[in-house]
Image 1 (cartoon, rainbow, N blue to C red):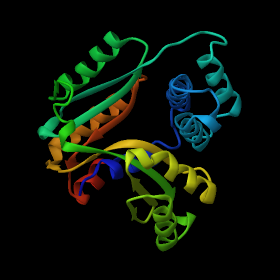
Image 2 (cartoon, rainbow, N blue to C red):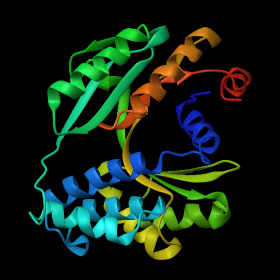
Image 3 (cartoon, rainbow, N blue to C red):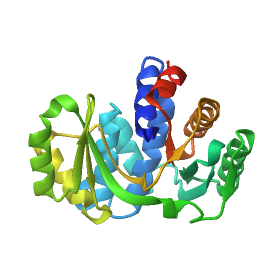
Image 4 (cartoon, rainbow, N blue to C red):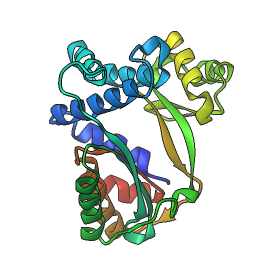
Length: 249
């Protein structure tokens, strides 16, 4: 199976009790600041900001924190500028990886990402060195008990989505990047805030890896995702359910 999304779900559950909430809120704050600066600081007029606020609410981020982040973006309080960076390369077993970051110090972030790749047997490449193996898409996730698959599929199709993939935990709605805001807003109106809504890199092909390679890769992903500057790690690894279960037990 192409395991990154399932791996992330398992690791999220595993760490749910001792989740580093402050770190998660810090990353969400950065996203809100960048979103607010990318357009008007009014979520009604700024689709990206609407999405960032919805993500923050899904993570139970207090409203005061959200309001403070927007004020920072409008120049009230400390002025912070974050840049969006993308790093590409290969991890253990030749797995293609894309690391997206929001940083106020490009040199620091590049050094830390490079170190994570090097320590775990990976190699960083140039921009677009692996992106051709992925497609950009909007991804919106609702818990499986939101509604049955047929109802969600119908609502998603009416909103302009391309597909709905349901498993025992979630409904995952896929749409074109240009349709993402409209699809998300339509589904939010019907079902409330999704548990996840973002633009993602979906692999067009997968790279099978064995248990040793998967073990090293999972450690590498955890190191990267624990980095304050890293917002998202995308991979194309494929591993058996048995191996995934052993390594995430």
